[in-house]
Image (tube, rainbow, N blue to C red):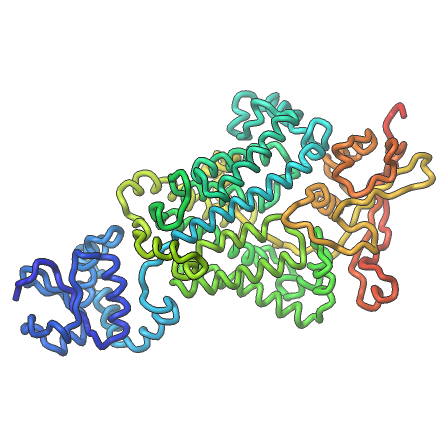
Length: 616
């Protein structure tokens, strides 16, 4: 029977599961198809019995052709961008129709159970999620992270890479130019090839500060993000040891993907800009997955015994680079609690990442677990902007339904009428974003494999393919805390005018005075303090930058001395310097009650023997 000008999808109106999924299909197909419960229209289609309607959905074409079950579903979705391949596969791929029909029959026979599953996973109708608010909050949050990163660099850069700093950028650029010649730019992409003086370095940082403020305000987001990425890459690539941390790479990768996610509008407003595409948002989810999963799996593949026997947190709080006073208290917790905490961490890092690709409720569970873990890490240690950046990367897990309650009524009204997320399969996206997606996905997968199995585990052809991308530091592998340090050596720098009486230099944040309470410094990162932690672990060897650092202190470089907490020789630099190595550990509750000390230390020996400048 005909009499209608559009296909009609007919379903069981008494079935909660059917109503939920019909709502999703209706949102996808729009007005191309009519939907009706058979209880209301059965008399129009006498050729179909009530039992058939209850057994499976039916799609009736205007010419009277009837499709049922999986064929009806695929037929209804054939004109939906990104889903038309289902009907083609059903018709042409051997075995696909059989498997589809079997799957549909199993689902139809278990609808009450699957209705409860749908409610648990989607929180109601399994409609496609939209991410207008998530994109806006993510990009503005990334602007906050960039702001902290550039401001933190501004106050340290002269002492780190300025002309009177420890590792001058100008000297580094000249050395690379002499060694690599014209090809140097592609091996070390940075704007500092054109200028590398202190003024230009500061200008780059100030450009980053201004651009970050514009991004927070939502002004010209795509252009501003490109400026931020170029400026930060330029500074990272000339800062050598001081900007080589995993969160520097993570910020560059997140910043690059943000350029793809950002709207092209002049001012960002959720609900008014075109919806973000599936492919770019999927890449953000993929980055978060890799960050968390690789951080968990590498703890196992690197065979560190403290992770394998769950004892790592019995060492972590006191051996991490810059502990906090909360970390002191966490260290005092009993061993069973520390082991339980490690087990929970493995659940968060190894299982929850797979929720990133799941339905709405699974994404929300992943969001909660990840944010809780980052909050605990931030409370017990100082990891610069890493924890904040990771939380920002979690924002795209929340769709407009989850975030909408946090917004004003006017924004909620805009979201209600905003178009859904643009489909993965739009033609222009296949042409423009498709190749970019392929490169990022393949390269990041290879980087992840190498993180899991170690350097040199990739075939030579894969290493050759990754080589041109690595200088841009925007497709990376991650593996935080994969090996736990079980001891805490600390370098104590001392100066003397006569070689007999020695006074210690205090750093701003790293442990020194045993009575000084560990403090909070994040999201700022005192990068010299961090490098001193790494240098102590390399004893008795010391990195080349440490020798440069000692030379600057003997020279009395104001920029370098500004990086320190105290200078016991304010009038003129000392004649001699030496570095002593101590073993530090947190005091026990009883020891602190008696002495007031947060640390206990014992001298190990010399890290650097007595040195002085010739001619002085």
